[in-house]
Length: 251
Image 1 (cartoon, rainbow, N blue to C red):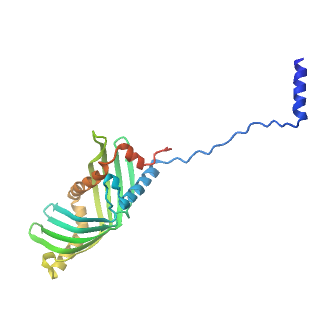
Image 2 (image 1 turned 90 degrees about the vertical axis):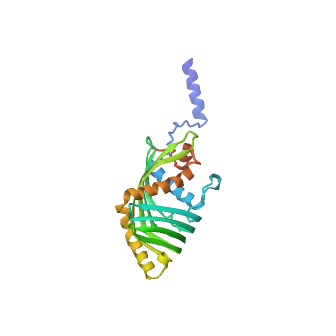
Image 3 (image 1 turned 120 degrees about the vertical axis):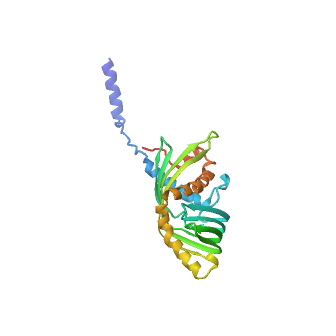
């Protein structure tokens, strides 16, 4: 009896022209995954954009180009140069035209970086006083223009979380190299031939100073760079930082 019922059911299916197909497997293409190197490269692009636009909500000004009414400079390079200056109406262009790489040690929260700034230009007004080799007076005031070429900065930076939850940079290490520099400080030594001579000396000596006085240069960069970095990091949490790094689907 059961066999008869099965035969009748089969006949009904075929008589109505029904076709029973095998279920087909559907291949789903995996979403492309982002490597950490790719994510950090994107972070650099995000930072480049941040330099150009700033972030008013977090109090971050536009830094590319940089404009500031006043900047105090205090340099001491191992007896070679002791120099203080007030820079006014400072304009700096080219900070966003960097080329570089960034790597991250997630366990240590340590970034290693290698940046080249090919064509920074700066100008404004200066009022300076100092000594070269501890003996030669260096002073003047007036307009100035400086154009370093292929400024290379490489080193490491630590990021830490404060008890408040916001970030800070407790350590910044840097090595600095410079291919060449052109400069014109009007009014050095009250102008004239001595001013032209001192401008030529500065132009020639700065690239070698960066190499021969590397520890002192690093200390200067740390003193200047950490407050600048903290002005951004102190407004960010770890979540904010990793939002800048597209770590989703990371391998």
